[in-house]
Length: 504
Image 1 (cartoon, rainbow, N blue to C red):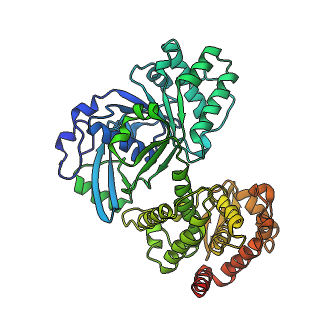
Image 2: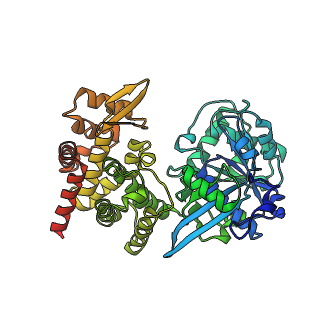
Image 3: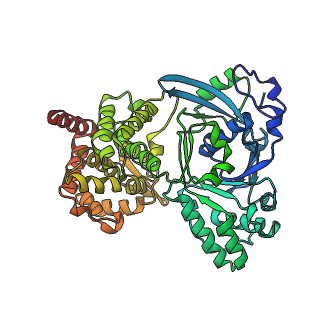
C-alpha cells in the first residue's frame, strides 16, 4: 500500500499520527520555495503540528525551482512520514507522523502561472524559502520570464503580481521568512528584491508597497534532518508502518526555528504558539551564534579528523574515545569562550550538552562526507571568526582549532583532477572534494607540496584576514599537518589530547 490521501483510512493510528480530512481541506496560507528535507522536517513540521491543534489552519504550496518532475510528491498527494528518533530531556523519543502540511508541489518551469495565481490568493500570508546559501544572490533579469531563473526574481514576480491583484492594499503584504544558512538571510533577500525592482523599473507605488506592506524576516533553523534512511531501515520502518512512502525521512527530536520579528510577525505566524521550538524575537543573534559555533563549528572542525580516522558518521564518532575527548574539549575550552557574542556560560554549557546528545543519536545517519561539503566556505564562515576572537581574548594558539585546520588541509589536498572534478587520497582510497575552492587547493598543492600549508594560510585574499598576524598559529597548524601526514591522524590526535591532560 502506497501512502496517499485515499489510503489514510487503512493506516494503523497506534503506530503513526494520521491527519484528518479537515486538515486536508485547509486553504494554502504559505508559499514555500524549496522541497528539501530540512523544510519538510522543520517549518512544515511546525505548521502541521499547529494544524492538528486547530491553530494556524493553513497548508503549504511548494515551489520546485529546479526540474519539472514532481511525481514523487504527486503520487502521494504530497503526504510524507517523519520518523522522529533520539533523546529529548533524557528520555528516548520514537514518533511517526504523517505530515499533511504540504498541499501540492508545483514545478516552476512547468507551471509558473499556477504560482503567480497563488500570489493573488486572499488566504496567502507567508513565504518561506530554503534555496541553499547560493540561492540568495542578485542576478539582473526580467521578472517577466517564464519563470525567472533566480529565487529573488521569482519572489519579486510573486510580490508584484500580488500588488497588482490587490491594488497596492497594504493589508495584503506578506511575511517572508528566509531559512538559508547565511547571516541576515531575510535582510539580504529583501535588499536584493528591492534592487531587482529598480532594475525592472517597477513603479514607485510598488516599491513603496514592497517596503511598507511586507516584512522580510531573518531566521535560523536548527534540526538534523538527514533525509531518507538506508534501504534496510526503510524496509523495517515501512513494515512497521504498513505502507510504502518514498518521501519518508528521519529527524532528531531537537528543533529550533528562531525568527526575527515583533508582534505583527507573531500574529501572522501563529503556529509558533504550539511548540517551544519556534522562537519569535526582536533579536535572534544569540541563537545563531550558539548554533553556528558550537554545533556547526564543532561539526566542521571535527569532519576532517573523523574522516581521516576512518569514521563514517557522527554517531560512530561518539563511540570513539579520541573523538569524544576532542569534541568535548574543543567546545568547552576553545569555542565557547571565543563565541563573538555575549553568551552566558550556563547557556553555552547547556547548548554544548545538547550538541553531544544530538551527535550521539543512534538513529541519525549523519555522514562526515556530507558535513565536509563546501568545507572551505564552512571554515571561513563558522571557524575564522572564532579563531580571530580567540586570539583577541587569549593571544595564544588554540590547539584543537589548529588541529582542525590541519585536518582540513590534509583532507583538502586535491591530488587529482578529472573532467573538472577534484579528488583527494587517503590510505590509497580516492574521494571527491565537493568544494568550490578545490581548484585553488589543487593548484597550491600541485605547485608546492612542501609549502602547501604556508601558502594557503598566508593568503590574505583567500581568507579575508591576515593569519600571519596570529602569533604561532601557522607554525602550529603546519606541525600538526606534518604529523598527520607522517604519523597518521590517530597518533596526532592522541598526542594533542595527552598534552592537554598534562596541562590540566
